[in-house]
Image 1 (tube, rainbow, N blue to C red):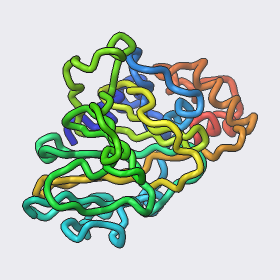
Image 2: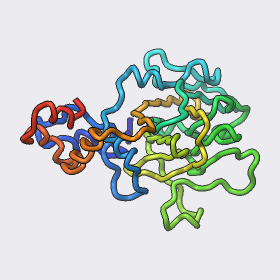
Image 3: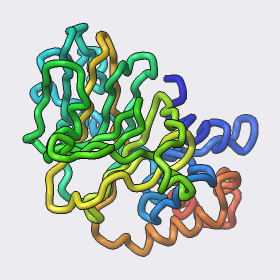
Length: 287
């Protein structure tokens, strides 16, 4: 998978093992993002510390075979991946099965760099966003029904047909926010998409860091994962990681989070040696 988000946020095997033969009962969705980049919200930190969802939930949130351009198809042997036919002068999209109106949600998009072509855009859209266009274009973000990040150009698009001027660059460091002439960020093979419908924001994680909020003002909509592709025979995989409801977290969950933070990632494997009842040890390990 090239630089997967298990590499985007470091190797779980390297970070989560305390030594030869010592491993956690589960592997968290992702390890902490490295120091550079924007800070994570407490809820996103918690979500990424949780074990990822199982296969059934991943399939529930997979690409929608009934909501796609006819120039691509969902693979029979891998329902999380679509394959685009080599159709010239065509831009093609597919939406995810599940739409989101509330809660915090995260999923990965795995898209090999050599299969992106001139217009590779990932993001979210309503059910009204178009799924096909003639020619090569950044279809996601072209109208008011979608929001997209162009992986090749490092630009953000929303309702581009109605706007004039240059599209904003993404990501930007604090020093670069007033300077769009910096080099384009090299997006690795796998990106984590973070949609917070309670805050109305969309952001991305890549290259070991949270890149910041890309879009705001998404509250009150029902949004689906979406990508637009132009490269013939490209294959793009979407894997739902996990989600959190908007309700306040239970006290037990907050206590588990505090205990795991106090231990730190490099000492999580010592949970079994703590002078605690086995039931509590199991709870700290999400068993």
